[in-house]
Amino acid sequence: MATTSNHYVLILCGGTGPRLWPMSRASNPKQFLSLFSEKTLLQETFSRYQKIVPTSHIFIVSNARYKEIILKQLKNLPRQNLIVEPEKKNTAMAIIYGSALIHRLNPQAIITSAPADHLISKEAIFSQAINSAAKIALSGQKIVTIGIKPTYPNPSFGYILPDSRFVEKPSINDAQLYIKKGAFWNSGIYTFSLNTLEKELQSHQPKYYSLYQQLIKNPKSVNTIFKQSENLSFDVAISEKSNSLTSLPAKFIWSDIGEWKAIWEQLKKNQDGLATIGKNTSLTSIKSKDCLVYTQPKKIVGLVGAHNLAIIDTPDALLVCNLNDSFFVRDLITQIVSSPKLKNYFLH
Image (cartoon, rainbow, N blue to C red; front, side, top):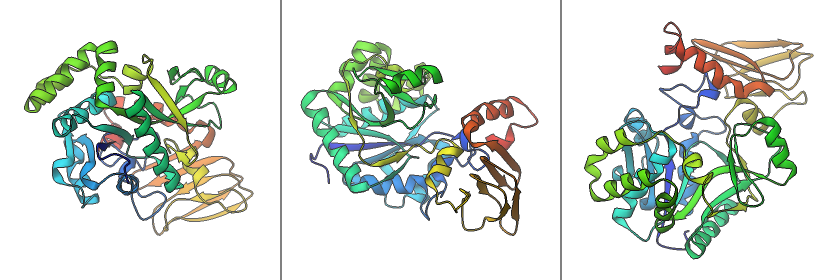
């Protein structure tokens, strides 16, 4: 359990997971899907942090659209620990809002903020890392993130450089250069004291600091406060500007499973590198290698000469994409959402 009774966890649960379309939709995004076990990613995340802090110290930040599904999936979550945002304003405001409400309960709090939709194994080692981060955050007045050793130059991640500078979503060429210099991927798991958060907001985001103070004094004004807020990620608002960022190298296994290739990498495969999602997917193949397949019950997928593909079949949509290009599914969703005839294939 936590090394300090002041340790709280803030799970960010408002994303829509567009790169995992068509399984992930705005109405049922990836954090609510069961991809690797009987549990959903949110349930696995919640269970993981219950081993680190008391359940009463775990808070979920999301939006009203997901309220009922969260309460259904997390039956042990105290209802008052579900923080509902009035509108979607990215992770900076989600963390600020959650931190302000925790401040009202305990101004001495140390907070670990974390995405709801990551895959983590070697959980005992993970717990040790989070407890170590809490100690550093408290004693060193630092924002502590967990650094992941890169396996390839992914432009979808933030990079922590050896001098603790942070760069969010660089180009592939820049990412290759950072990796050669010894950079780590940013896991997006941050641990900080409220005192450190306030100093960082005052120094780098005075408008956010003002909104934070307003939320502490009068949380009922949240609708008005959110309308005044910018739409920035915490990475852009704070991490790229901070001189107080430090990182711990991960010794556990981590994946943000943000795209189909990442899921394929984590699943068990046959001798030809073929992997399936779910118990109901039936697959047969000839001369095919390194593919990921998901399909509907009572349907079979046959592959002939297929290499390095994600084939994701849902009742109303089919995705076929090269696994190496799977991060471009986000751009495909941009096209779908911009079309009046197609937008409901993601939005609903």
